[in-house]
Length: 248
Image 1 (cartoon, rainbow, N blue to C red):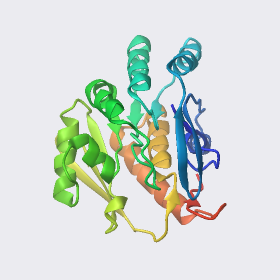
Image 2 (image 1 turned 30 degrees about the vertical axis):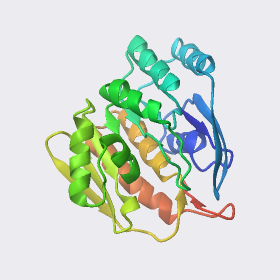
Image 3 (image 1 turned 180 degrees about the vertical axis):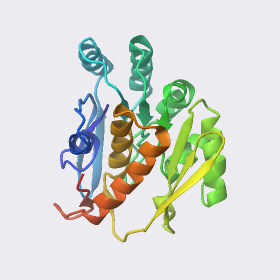
Image 4 (image 1 turned 90 degrees about the horizontal axis):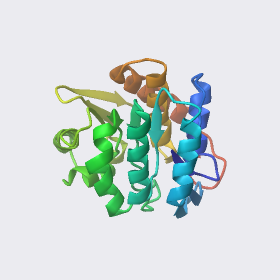
């Protein structure tokens, strides 16, 4: 469940590329239509609730996925519909990439949606993958150092989500992702690459979801995703005038 990115670098297009590369069958439900390119996001237009719900219901009446992931959900109505659908069909292995703010600074998620995600969706989520700004938004604390990351992870874990992975590239000091399972913190560090890249969070969360679908555990799935994103960044390419696109 994600947005349509016309330039193909993020959202549904990125997710499906990742799923195909990893050998799983990908399906997609549009939560929004975006107007964007490699320079930034101009607009985000959420689909109406009835359309979103019907896409899901028709699909799930036929096929039950082994894992699922979200990208941008836009508003509280769509989040509420998704919560009901997950409960009705008893869906498992949900990976939530909150996509609250785009790489170019465009707000993608309104405050009411944040509240419903925290209250209703996180308890149904297996792995939550916020970046630094999103970790701050959902935890309610400023996240500026490693100690803040750990505290934010504890707070979000306390909302009912068993695994929280905070991606740290926004700190601009190192590419350290922090994995927290309610007991242990595990740091995963790779080199920090210069430049700006489109769709890193999508590739990361989609890789996790695909690995869960293949039967891998949470930590293994996240570690694989970390390596996959680094490889995709190394192989990124320009298709426009702005950010580079990851090669899934």
